[in-house]
Image 1: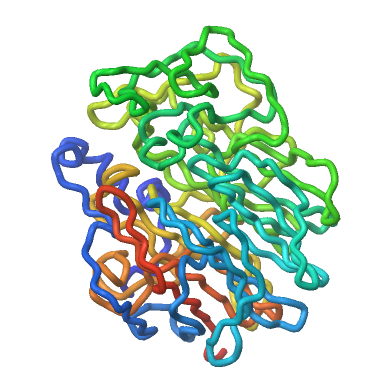
Image 2: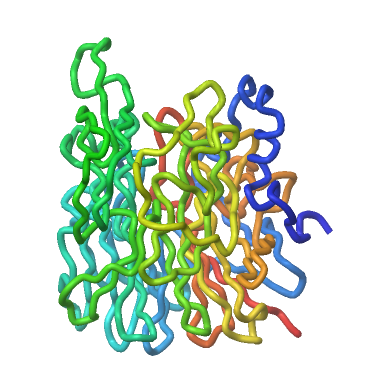
Length: 491
């Protein structure tokens, strides 16, 4: 049966496209990129569940349509469905972050709104919603919404760079856990961060380590987009502001809050605590049925002053106190492996740290290169099937800005067996590739960004961000988001 087998070996684990690109680097170097967003789009968006292929015995339906940049779904104590609209999208498009109740028939009702987008993650626990406010413009926060009142639990999170404050989930120990992404792609501020928009707003911003780190003194030269002189150059070191070189043996003090970490706080607020660090962008967090915390981590891109090639997204099992390798490792492998991690025609990324805080753990699973593995959840019920396995929403590639691909990567929901690391397709558009519906001309999935099970475990809700094409910069389309629901039709 087409595409529904087990992905075995590194080709499968690193993604359909990356394996071909690595094996044929000369072809990769000269061939044009063909990412999922590299297409045209003429509204309105078509929505047709029949254009999506699922395993036998499952059915798909559209629960709500016309959403603008939806990113998360959650359920209250009565089982009612709520969707979070981000209010911001890459491409520097800003709208209004909102929490919406999805009423029967799909008509949304606004419950709350904010003014510091993006709102990235949503959870519910004992009468309160917990919102991860990315804070692209004013810094990140964790908010509690109870009885119509928004209360900040954590403020001042370092979230004005490439990656933001991500989903907060309640742990079995009564703490609220959340992810905080990095400011940069690989530790060095560069012209790509100006393209993202934030370097011109925050020229002094950079990554902050969670604990003291000692630098190797490697510096990276790049054009200086902060001056009008096209010939002006800047030299920048890791964990430092743009245009600031590093020195061998220089110590960068660690502190909280920090970048590239999983943090926790009591649900009533209080002191912030470090759980683990060395992630790049820990976007999705979920506890398995046995109470273990897992994280989906968006891996390096092939961009900026220190591009890194061929790194698949990672599903991690979180070990308290561990360091997961960013910015010098990927999935436990050192970036000194130049043959693997060096982009064609570019310099090897090497190491920027003189000493490493520890030995990175091994990943649970590797997903596609540039797949953007984001929100996920674990099945807990025989009513849906695959109990104990993770269902991961893959937003899809943002090529060519993040790096070249020879065919679309992501744009689907995959199932991961954490016991083996095996990755299976679960929901993907029909056709010969993993392309989004806008590229195929169909009515299927565009950019899945979250996957959560209903409280009874019988339905998987998939948040589809909507159409985002990619030209010189990302071009998201308002009003094209969809909330889907997957159920099992029979035994």
